[in-house]
Image 1 (cartoon, rainbow, N blue to C red):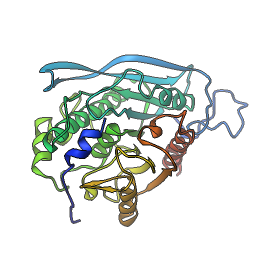
Image 2: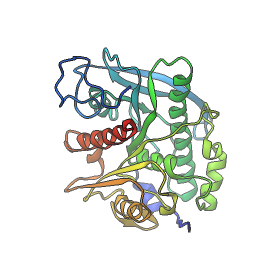
Image 3: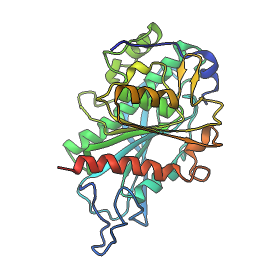
Image 4: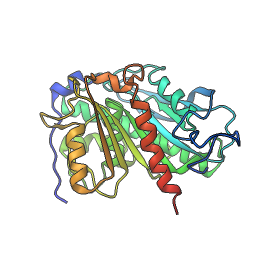
Length: 316
């Protein structure tokens, strides 16, 4: 396949701030109370500061303990659970320890295991070199999160992860990170700034932990994200869900200068035959897709997307 690539230019960088159909444990639960689609649990457990890896941050010149917050249903008896690794936004330069907690609780009530990870931050992303340096620190860290859970499933099995149903996603910078984790591979065209940054941070596999563990992704959730190269996507890669506000002035849903938002991602996925879905939220701003109080439809759409793919896995 011919590869297309272009630089992510400074204007953007400056502004980026068990059974799949298992029922609830109540044997009399109605058919509507389907795990992974509806809130079949009333309580969740949030566990903070789980260390999934360590790595040097070139911004601080220190080695950081990389941590995540884990959300799971209370008193869950399921032998294996679908996992969503969720990476918040913040333009690669800021984060918050409560960012997207509402997603974690809502999805855990539907039976998902949800890991919201911190990643190494950067001082600025105002040049292509700085942008890609920040991006590949984040991709290395997100891959370490995924491998942390896969390795646990292969050994101690503390988290009871269904390794056939692992999803990743995020908002803004976290969405960009997820898109590059899922779709960038050795066959894709690369520009010098990207190649140099990638090699600096462990190459495609990353160097933030558990690099000897393989994983497979079931789907990708893109909330207000973009890529700089549509050619990264191939037909046989993980399914893609994109949610984007039509009033997003930070990461445009359409084409920008050297960037491709959710609409061209959708159009390209359709051309190559990649399993995909696009939802444009009328009137929504950049951060709205990460705020369930503003975008009430966002979490139900995400649950339906994952539920449908999990159901496909379970079908004979």
